[in-house]
Image (tube, rainbow, N blue to C red; front, side, top):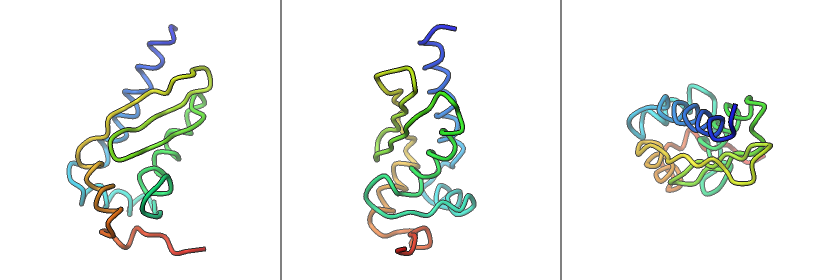
Length: 111
């Protein structure tokens, strides 16, 4: 199997995982609550990042996952450049709102 096909497959799998979260910021929040994904605003400890980390790290090819408000980046063990997947609008909106204090039930208490 060629490296580009593997990268493409990983991007498709990640895109499907993102699409499954819902079509609105509210359905994304409901999905995060259903999965028990809580986190902190502003950074890599937000619920979406933690959820995707758990889901995608199950793939033995993946070694690191990073999410910002626009894109998901997946680093695999054999590639120097990450696989980049644009976030669906609903996920981007959720992250924007979460960073501003919406969906307080998804904010994890301080340890």
